[in-house]
Image 1: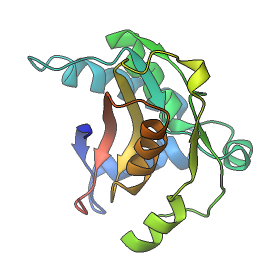
Image 2: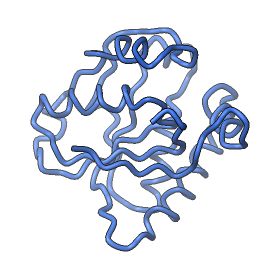
Image 3: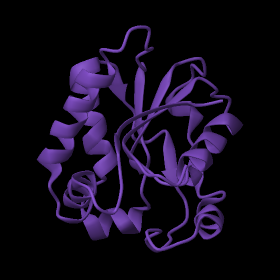
Length: 171
């Protein structure tokens, strides 16, 4: 069971797509941090919302990290953490297999690309009851977040929320 906190609606024709492309492909890291702050201010103000104690950016494969030079989800987490508190734990999950961009893939292809793509390092966070905020730029089909949650569940973590900048109409 995962709670989803998605801030904006993503489509092929709106400005959210442009923003996500700027942070993902144009190296606009300060925009990612600023959007994380705005998302934290907005979503964090909802009554009754539980704020994660740990922010966990969805990891990218080390090869992709070398190619891109940064993880946009980590920059979003920096913005969220600066507004809502908690700590960032970027090494709790590790991306274990490299795949090409999923932007053109079907839901089934996306699912098979990320199945078993993540491993958890539970020794980095021994308290499995901690509320984790899993951070990603956009949720399209949910397969990446499900694969991350599966790895976390296998390590004993069950108190997880997904915080995404954008949400597509595929859900």
